[in-house]
Length: 254
Image 1 (cartoon, rainbow, N blue to C red):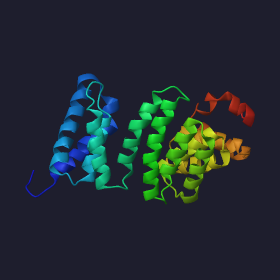
Image 2: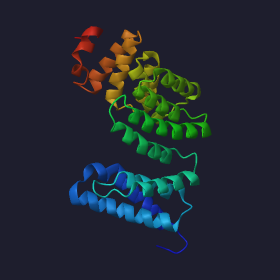
Image 3: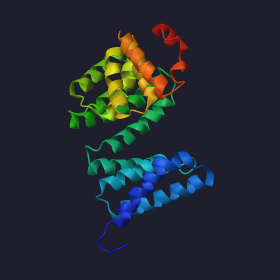
């Protein structure tokens, strides 16, 4: 590496992407451990060498978050790295979600309806609410919070946060994915089809999403549009439409 360059920093970014996007799912056993150790060690070195780089701090925190079983670092250390990443770049979304997920995972481990579950979820919601206030024109955190309240069974709070997101939404794949899940669960089919349409446009070969859009169109009172989508699916993804024969019967497509 030449002096005066940041090649080591860029190498850390590449190792992070290889590990989190490919090796986590492709590797197992010793190979997975070796891949994790390589990414972790380079990112840790860069984190200490470049304490001002928010991207390195965020990637390092994420790598630690998805460590193989038995290799997990102490929670307090992960939180320290996450807080540093947030301090460097308060409006960056990824470390905010990673921090919220620490509490969400604890909540997921608790019985449904329990006080402990709500306590952990509320902690996540508090942090995400602070982030949402920093980015009032960004809809994604609003839908994350809405979904958390939905999981807790607080439909009124969920609807309030979803309305905030809807008011400021601009076409965005990640937001559309989160919003569509929220509206499907809420059985708000008009809004579900809107966001599924955005998602299908962004991912034209994601045929399961297109099938979800067909169902949302049908439930929103647009059977002809649903039939058109099913015919497209039969051409482009043979067999997928037939996985739900009850839906096809309702459409009159059997």
